[in-house]
Amino acid sequence: MASPTSLDTPVVDTHAHVFLPGVLGACGEAGPELLDDAQREQAFRAGGYTIRGVKFHPSPMSDLDLRLALMDKMGIARQVLSPYPMVYFYDQPAPVAARFCARHNDEMAALVARAPDRLAGLATLPMQDPVAAHTELVRALDELGLKGASIGGRYGDRELSDRCYDPLWETLAARKLPAFIHPGPMDAGGKRSLTRWDLELVVGFAIDETLAITQLVFGGVLDRHPGLTAVVPHGGGFAPFVQSRFLMALEKRPWGKTALARPFADIWQQMVFDCLVHDTTTLEYLIRSQGAERIVLGTNFAAWDQDDHVVGQVAGLDLPSAQRAAILGANALRLFRL
Image (cartoon, rainbow, N blue to C red):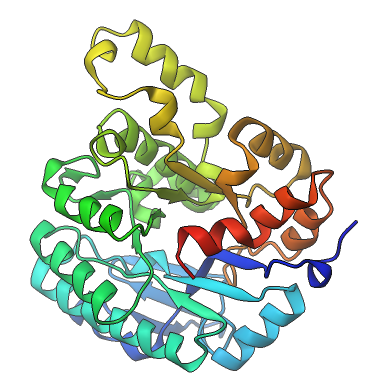
């Protein structure tokens, strides 16, 4: 079994959230804010959602020295940082959200500049305003040097496949940078039945990621933008395991035969999935069914379900060394143009 430190290709973590203390209170009444409850347990509030059980500050989520130390311990050479998904703020007034996103992206770029050989960053965008989202994306890529965008699954009444977002997808495609599709907790539908047992976190993300992929495929986003790559974490939700049903629907449902202009197989190849599925049997299926060239490393770094052993898990897979290296880092270096 190869160890991460013995590999020629640096290990790159593509699923690494960051909390930036400089954005506290930057979205008005929505916060975000850190709270200490009666049990002295740290809590984090963003809008109407509060999460406990995750230490935000000081922790590797927010402190650069602690982050780098934990990266070293886990064998991670580089990370692509994405916003903590609670701070998408898609439910806030568009001008407020736009100011917050600009502040967050400035703070992200400043953090990356402190360790440019170890970190890269993704932009967050005010998706409830398609024009403002595109404007901020261009600024974040061209002026701040960020390496793509982290985007949730839905934005008020708009779905991901709405054609008003085509300029945004085209900009990412033209710059050969990916869209990282990561839902926020309330993107799981906001149904109260998902709050019991933390189901929003346990299965809600996987549900929303699967639904986001239906928008990318059936909604024509990837079809219209053949140069666009979508990186979907948590192994792509359930989508890789029901891929055959996508194809069956296109072949048998009344709307299916005219839904896409390009072959389904070509469109599916535009999606990349991270390896955060937690067990080796599931990971082996994901690699076998999707191809090692379309799998990237993801740890959910510093979040409640951070996988401490995923680097060693991938390094120990019975695969050709080139495929292991691709998953551990080479794919991410190429996709995010690091």
